[in-house]
Image 1 (tube, one colour):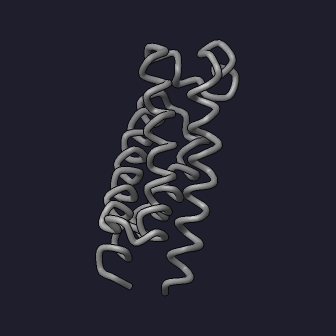
Image 2: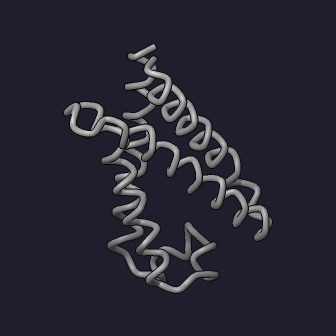
Length: 121
């Protein structure tokens, strides 16, 4: 089970690092073509979401890996789960159904890591 948790955490970390970095460094104008939802939020909120994604990516790996406050790993995973639930709500409201599959998969991966690490699998 530990290997499955590491794989899930690694996938989450890789994806959230890339997507978070994109949201943090690119302007809203450049993001609109692929992320239409940015129109509904101020630039500072989009950048904050990117920062949260980067923090979550680091949080699902580093605390458990270094054994420094390892409880932060399942907390970070739970926060990424919450982030995806909120993303799903935004996409449903905007009727952007093409994004829902990836959001649900990411939410499930984050929930798996959170539950698995909290349970000590």
